[in-house]
Image (tube, rainbow, N blue to C red):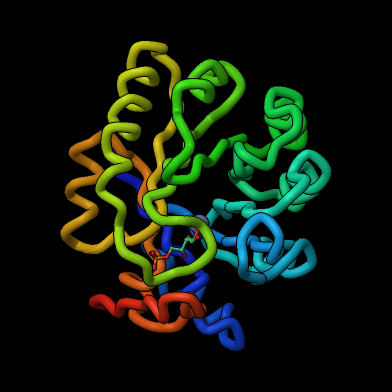
Amino acid sequence: MPVRISPSILSADFVNLERDLHRIDTADLVHVDVMDNHFVPNLTLGLPIVQRIQEVSPLPLDVHLMIDDPDRWAPLYAETGAFSVTFSGEAAGDPTTLARAIRGAGSRAAVAVKPDTAIEPWLDLLDEIDMILVMTVEPGFGGQSFIEDTMPKLRAAREAIDASGRDVWLEVDGGITLETIVTAVENGADTIVAGSSVYGKGGTPNPSTGSRHFGPL
Ligand code: DX5
Ligand code: ZN
């Protein structure tokens, strides 16, 4: 099974974003975290910046929306030419219609689930989506610790995808290090997001925990 790496620019230097995009040009994708300070308690960047990243990125964009009302916004991110647009399942009003709109705009459609969200209802959507993202931390901040309790859910998703025979990717995001990447892949992940363990520093510390870890470059 091929394993794809999608470094998260949440931990990049936003003032030197183009330079930092080129630092990861041997990866497979670039993961762009969009946060609105409503769905998650943090704010990052929005549509105009994603449009500009799309223009200069050497890698396809893996856009991860952590925002309210993805039904309105996600198709607009797809229209930027993003390779993949992931919406948060908990925030979606009509996931099937939304996935079709994202695909209709030319992107791969994906649904993300938070660590405490059951995966089963989302497995009914396998015909409509191209990727499932199992969050391995609470969304909102880089530098948090991998939540091992999400692994049964990851395995359940892997089994359902394999049983479906469909080419649906299975992504993990949060707390990936040289150790936890092995756990995630053993439990079925084929697409790996890594922020602080790639860029080594940066990102926004979580004000409630101060949590931030720095890994190898
Ligand atoms: C967190 C974001 C992640 C974040 C991961 O909510 O979705 O993509 O950048 O950062 P690390 O790899 O540092 O946990
Ligand atoms: Zn992310």
